[in-house]
Length: 241
Image 1 (cartoon, one colour):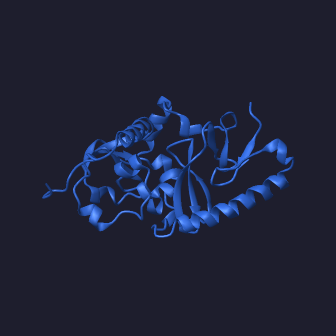
Image 2 (cartoon, one colour):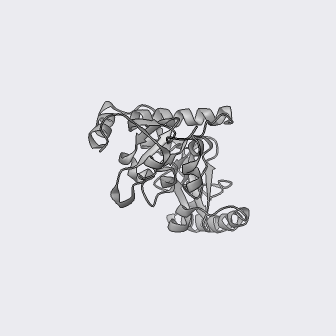
Image 3 (cartoon, rainbow, N blue to C red):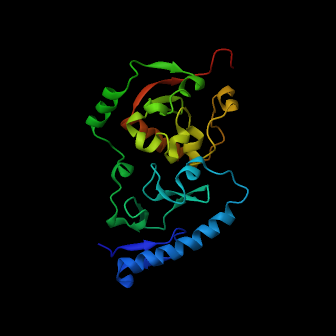
């Protein structure tokens, strides 16, 4: 097992724990690097739309549900999806990148989930049967007031209410709730949330996605299909072509 390490928020400096010797010194080092990182990120974010999650939760690193090697980072209201250096994973306890052997990825790293988990999703889903949904219909299910959460991916609609800790109100990924999140998940993009224009537009055909984006999206489809209950298909509203 490798000795524990700590990194500053831009992941450019890796400080060996043995060289720091004490938690106090580790905290001081991380705080210094963090202050520098925040200043750089604030400048880099000029001209970008601020992220609602970051505005609500303040500066810091946050778990990215889709990958152990990535994390969501907030600074001065702006948000970035960051990736740990090679051979490091994001530690959801220390909230920094750490040695692979010292990180328990938990659900983030499980490509195959137990049959019990799938049965639990069916048991707790308030939706019975399999039906068609329009974008406007699923937009009513964002987890508000402790209600259900629906997310559409590649034409399928999933009840992700069991993942409220990831997709519920107040989380970074609530921006995906109640909408067709295919393109956002494929490109790992965070926007300002669903708009009326999006609700009224045709379903995204995703034809212009890169091979890398398509592979990323397929990974999410695989994850959702084994972890959450598929409750139907996304269709165009009547009158739309």
